[in-house]
Image (cartoon, rainbow, N blue to C red; front, top):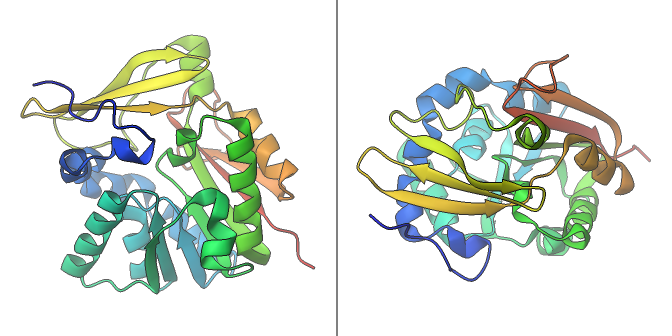
Length: 256
C-alpha cells in the first residue's frame, strides 16, 4: 500500500481522513492512559486551573481526559478532520466541551480571546509542525496572550536532542502505544523529522515535523514572557536527557 498522505500542500493537510481514521489505533488510548497516569490533569489542578484550552486536540485523547477530570475544556485543532473525530469520540464517551473550533495558533488569542484560560496544553508533539522560527515565536506569544495572569502552559515534544545526537531509539512505552503499530523516522536531520507510521493491516502514512531541541523550546517560552520553565522527561523529573522518548515543558504567565 502506498503512503496516502503525501503532497497534501500544508501541515494540517497531512491529516487526511484516512490517516485520522487510524489515529486512535496509533495513540492506543488504554496504554497511553496507563502511561500518563493523570499527569496533565494533576498538573492543571495543582496549579488551580479550571478553564483549559487543548490547542492541538487531535482525536481528543487529552481533551477528553481533562474534561473527564472535571476541568472546563475548549478543544481546538488546525485540522478539521481531527476536530471532527474529537467531537465524535467525545459524544461516544459522554463528554461535553465548553467549545470546539478549528484554530490557528498564531491567531489563537484573537480567535479564542485574550486572558481566557487558566491553562493551555499543546501536546502530542504537535508544536513541531511549525517549520519557521517566526511562526513558532508568534504562536508562543499568542499562547501567552490567551492565558490569564498566573496561567500555565504545558507543551510536549519528542526528545529530538537524543534522536539527532545519538540516533533514533524509542520504547513506545508512553506515546503511540497502539498494538502492532510502528512509528520511526524515515528521514532525520537538523531541519526535518519525517516520521512513518505503519499499521497491522499494511496501511502507512508519513508526517513532516521540525526537530525542536529542548533548550530551544525553553528559550521560546521565556522569550514569549513565560517564567519558571520546568521540564519533565516521560512524565518524571529529574530525567536523563538522553534516555527519554518525550519531554514535557511547563511554564507560567507571570501574575500581575
